[in-house]
Amino acid sequence: MDKVLFDYKGRKYQLSLKQNVITLFESSENPSEISLIDNALSDFDAAFNMDKNIVITYYSKEQNIVLATLTSDNKIAKKILYHYNDKTIYIDNFRLIICNDDVHVFFMEHNLSNPKKILLKHYIFNGALKVKEVAAINNIQIKPFYSVAFDKFGILHLVYVTTENTQKIYYTTFINNMWTLKTTVSEAVSIECPNIKIDDKRNIHICWVEENIIKELKYRKKIDGGWPKGSWDKKITLSFSDTILGPCINIIDSNIWCTWIQQNTFYSAISSDGGNSFSRPFKLAEKPSSYELVKKIEPSSEKIIYANQDGDELPFDSDKNDISYDKDSYFTFYIKEVQEYLSTLSKKIENLQKEKIHLERNLNQKSYEIALKNRNIEELKENIKKIYEDRTKYTSKIDNLNSVYNNVLSENEKLKKQIKDLQNKILILNSKLNEKVENGTIDKIKTIFFGKSNEHL
Image (cartoon, rainbow, N blue to C red; front, side, top):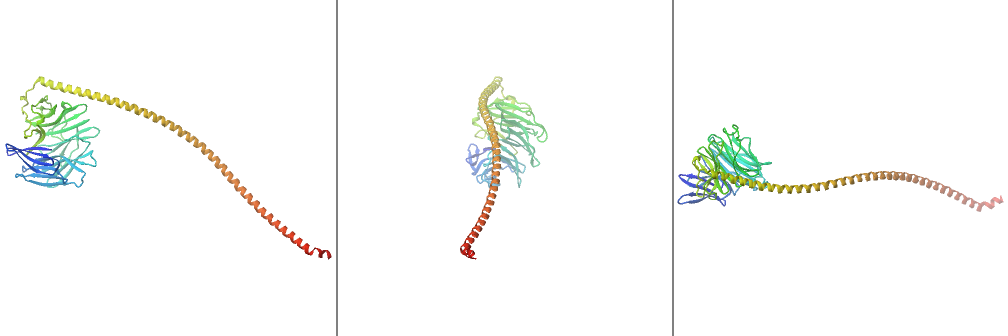
């Protein structure tokens, strides 16, 4: 929250956040403003404790989740619930609920290294700190995307929006120190601004804005005391328009009021039968430019309302029978809504047709590219087949050449052996020849020396 209202001793006060400073403003004939906290890094929330002192929770520049108690003399006593060492962590979307002695702090934990995943966390403090991780929220861009309330027995009820294949709004409740299994309340292309309220009979009332073709303001209730008892009634459409903003639901004198902004005008619809049916929407005289959505706290309750800069709530008439319904304005309202719906539907159909043409062109282009790729694949298959055939031929030729080569090697070895044998024979012949030459020479010498003597003898 960025602004919290409360009354104290007949005076109106506002807690607000501007430029990291939480201030206390007293709205009176002599207004005054006091700076309470100067190191708030994101938003904050506040509630009354059992001593009827104001407790503020926020995330500090020092990366602490802090509980700050405002005393009667406007002094602040701070307690650090948790410190983050990781500088990539960022905390915002605080909700503070104090039931009996239990302090419940809800917030969204962002990790800058994984911005698409956000953790919805629940801290419980009662002398000791307990940490509960409620859900992992995916791809959420719209704030707020969760709402929490407590019934007369102090049991917490929570709705939140997350993105899966589509966006879904889930409901869960906190019983026996644990969150129950979630149940799906609705599913659409886009869901935003869930708001939950519990009546005195513990019936659960939820309103939200969802969009499939056009934005619709939806309502649904769960009867007989919440989980695990009871069942969900059917969804009711209170309005449809692309200009729906900031719905909130409140219970005034057993009547259920749903108020929202549409076409820069406040509208309300009332149910006097516990949410089984609603009146036709009607305009409120006040201008949205003078009001903003804030939290109003009391010692035993809280509510989300529209209030102006002076802290005055958007006025409601508790008796719906006193409201002047004009038949013509009623039909004019719905005729305008139907015209707006048809105009929006026509534009969206036109956009869808353009998108269809664009997709068909892309499809044709992709089909052509696929056909080319398929043809290339067939050509590639033929080339591969030819390569395999050539490879077989070359393999056969190589085998033949290897065989010839082996034969040549074998013949070469034989020739080498024959040459060696011939060389050996030549050596033998040379040896014999040398021997004969030597013997002939000796005979000649003998003849020379002994030939004549022999003749004489």
